[in-house]
Length: 173
View (tube, rainbow, N blue to C red):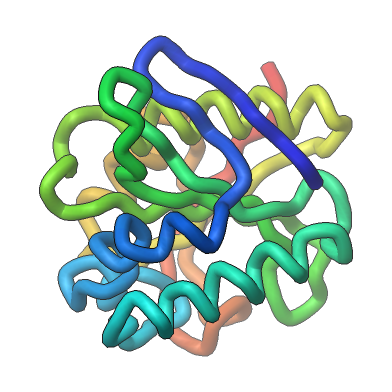
């Protein structure tokens, strides 16, 4: 689903294959990928990242709305600082999960919360009834972002990714 949202500091837009170098600063580091679910290995080079971006772009039109994957771009300098997605959680693909990943050099600046709020608000406008986030309990940053987004902790589960995860949920106010 094509999307472009703006916040005070950020632009949330579709990925482009030209974003490969910037995306690699996010998805090419173990510091980031070790925190994602399911656990991923960092991508090794810009060409590998370009292939992943190409796959994400190609898959986009086939996703069930409002699912998608987007780049998070800092407006003041045009730098891609991260990515986020709204996707159906396995195994039953009934619940929408919000995910986010940022380059470690911008951690702690509130970008994940700012981008997450924008996507959640937009997703609720599209008619979905709730959004979930899942995180390892050791991923204190992700748990903190989920709470700053107003998500409620609803428990722990191994249902989604065969590893024990904290589950957070947000419904429209």
